[in-house]
Length: 97
Image (cartoon, rainbow, N blue to C red; front, side, top):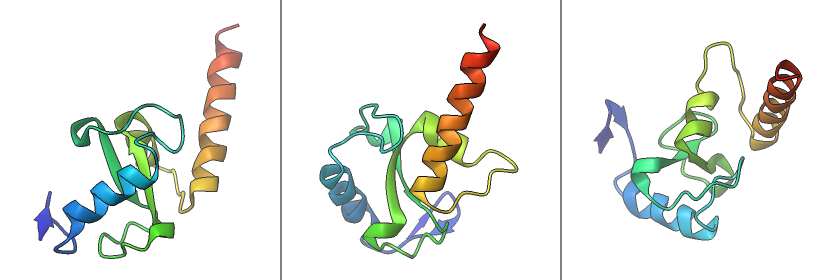
């Protein structure tokens, strides 16, 4: 099945719902509620939309998902992304003083 021009497994809708439930309906980076599909995404870390292995999928709110796709950000693991978010928060805090 195609979504936004990308090929996904036929059972992607069911898979994404299972991931949302297993991950407690919260963004795995910032902890925001992520139960509404319009306000969140189940993201493929390796960006292969046909790789639905649990370790390749993360539940992200839209804000964190957009940050993940910023130009020049090459993150392929959730740990790398958490590090990126931590650095961004430190930079924002520093600039506010």
